[in-house]
Image 1 (cartoon, rainbow, N blue to C red):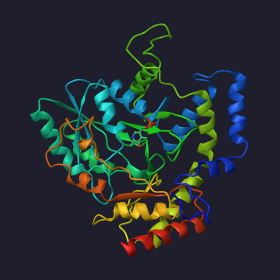
Image 2: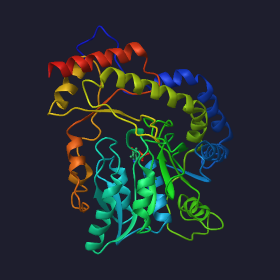
Image 3: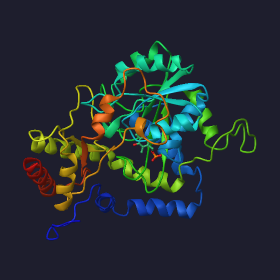
Image 4: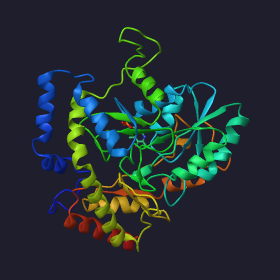
Length: 383
Ligand SMILES: *Cc1c(COP(=O)(O)O)cnc(C)c1O
């Protein structure tokens, strides 16, 4: 309930503002596809894949129907399945672990770092040990670039090396961010991203892509996204999926990619103003040296059980918030029977009770942001 009916409503993510900026460009692009009628794997899909590869520096981009499918395609291309363990953080969106289960493998949960919210690479060795103890073969690790911040990809690579783990970066929230001055899409063996509308680079429906430098793996994923075709469409050499990025969505994404670098700068500006206005009253996110964030979410930590009261006060002032994520995966109904790596997941469990995300998008203007900051300060001082 917005008690401040005298003030305009605040958007948590303002896709309409972006649409106003794009003007008629997207409509024209969509109209072109409707005219040429190549709705599946039309020319815009190839163009977008090439532009995305150039943007992030990956050699190959295979677009598909969603971020979840992107993760599935990569695991399937590597032959990961029953009897295999896939290590992933517990504090993430469910799709990260869901894909391991979908291919028949077993997700093994590890903890995250409490300042970055990203996978604690030091916990990977313990999860490998746990997996082996259960008779599973540790095959892959899925670091997540949560809330837009790059994970510590150097530490993950070092931890994965001894066991030869396949590293699949889940950059659904972090695509566009950098690690050591390189954009995500080039770390690990493959990177998956999502174009769900609310992601930093979203389309007007569902979409996703996998990036890799491995040409053979890219070929297998192109086959898998189209029913496992071989030399032609009616030659079926593997069991695949129907998972293409719609040509219309590719056309939308070509236009959105043009403004994405500028939007990343705008997101960073918003994040800096939040930090300036709130760092003395809440734990604001920090970006370690050598990393950047695209701020898919701006997530505060409020300790001492005050989080829910803060959410309620902000709601009363017309400030929308969201809890990402209220239940860590190892406690979710669908996932609680899967193993937790030696070392536990205490940080994930604690964060779920402390995090709260504020409105964040590239078009959040300063007066609106000041209203949010003032409301958070008032609420936390009263608590
Ligand atoms: C959104 C998201 C996904 C899944 O993307 P979809 O396009 O919605 O399937 C996977 N992992 C993470 C971390 C996400 O945030």
